[in-house]
Image 1 (cartoon, helix red, strand yellow):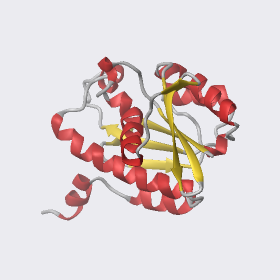
Image 2 (image 1 turned 135 degrees about the vertical axis):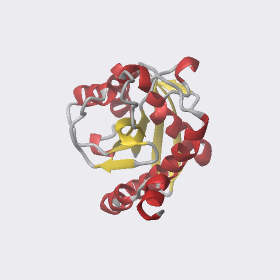
Image 3 (image 1 turned 120 degrees about the vertical axis):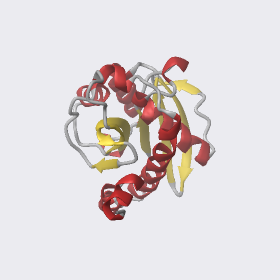
Image 4 (image 1 turned 60 degrees about the vertical axis):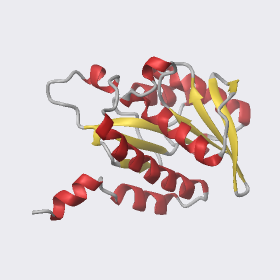
Amino acid sequence: MWAVVGLGNPGNEYASTRHNAGFLFVRRLAREWGVRLDRRRNRSRQGEARRGRTTVVLALPQTYMNRSGLAARSLLAAHRIPPERLVVVSDDLDLPLGRIRLRPEGGAGTHLGMKSVVLEIGTTTFPRIRLGIGPKPEAADAADFVLSEFAPDEWEPLEQSFERAREALELVLKGRLAEAMNRANALLAPSQRRGSSDP
């Protein structure tokens, strides 16, 4: 069994904000996999999918971002899932929109939701997928920027990053983490690919 936890804030006022990229990804994944995120358990809205012989719990913590770890810890304990089978999906201000990064472990950086997860489950050894939401305008405050909504022209590259993240996640669930990292981390956003060759 695996758990995929998207980080974000509950509530309509946050639904389309950059900080909710993890929520948005898990909701998209649930639609594609035919999963209803209607169970309210373990401080999350969650549902279960079957991927081959594997059960995958999709979860949206309802604790607000800075206490996401409480939901992750409760979820793992309830389903007896080891941390190495937890995939956390979050936004990343330092990655440009359209890019993703997959890592098998590592520190939380400045992301408060990830810090909470690390603190509550007591380890940094779990896969994480980071979805680019940057770059932040130079004059913008970081807290205000992550809580701002995506602009209309930003949804297409965001959806492209979700597709790459889904492909990477499918490989992770099959035990092909190294292959998933090679594919996901090498991909550039479309604008970056054009910039490398266009006159």
